[in-house]
Length: 357
Image (cartoon, rainbow, N blue to C red):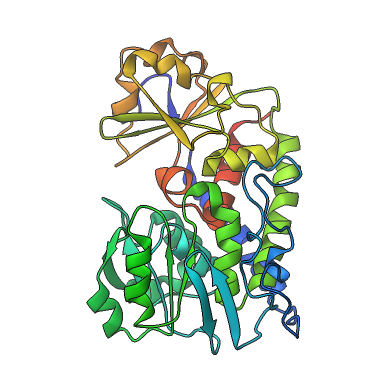
């Protein structure tokens, strides 16, 4: 139930637009040819932006594969050797049986037209988030056939081995990555992305490289950057947009380098002064400091979806955004849990439909 002075965005149009927008650039890019001879692995078609602490054009997060990583190959060129966050891996042929173990990697795979054979799930989360199921309805049967591999922080090694994958993708975040990489590499070629929402663009490009689709991924990102800039012109650029999430007992605000914060930066959206920090993705606040979550708009997520966990708080009615009916509950998965390209499209669409001039 949504309390007085808050509202929930209708997700039907947002998700349908997000799904269409996510697929269209990929389909357009799939006709592009490979780059031919290998270049040094520091670049490659998908790593044209290079290693950047922050991207150009107002981006707040890395926009290219870090120097020294990637394969230097274009689309569909195999064999390829991909340098990554735990070493270097040779991939002999286009992967047909892909296993993923990291946050946002299912999003990347689906955006590139690939359905993995196995996937992990986040703590208390679905293996296939609703926003992806709705964005890719044509993959419903293949998604339902995916094998569950347990938790993202501790995937089931025996189950992964039983699937006989020809590529495994994991990330460095939230686990003993070196040990896990050693175990997975004994099963199949394994590529490691960095992880965390801050790195979603570079991880998209690196995973796409391993799948043989770096040019396709770069084309997608180029299109997204253009679309974000255009969408930014349609919103109230003076209105500050706050990002707020409650999961269990934790209340957090999200800064410029968070996943959703990076989409807002691409759009040129204004942020409250309390959320312009760049030293971490989020900051935890107490119930007594809820005013730090205020802004002209509040886009809030709640783990499990029960809005009353926020809206019943004593200070909630005192917030400016709430009093002006500008507090909007958003889909928790794409905004705050899964950092991937289709999630980014969903955030972009939601903001465009909400923070209007």
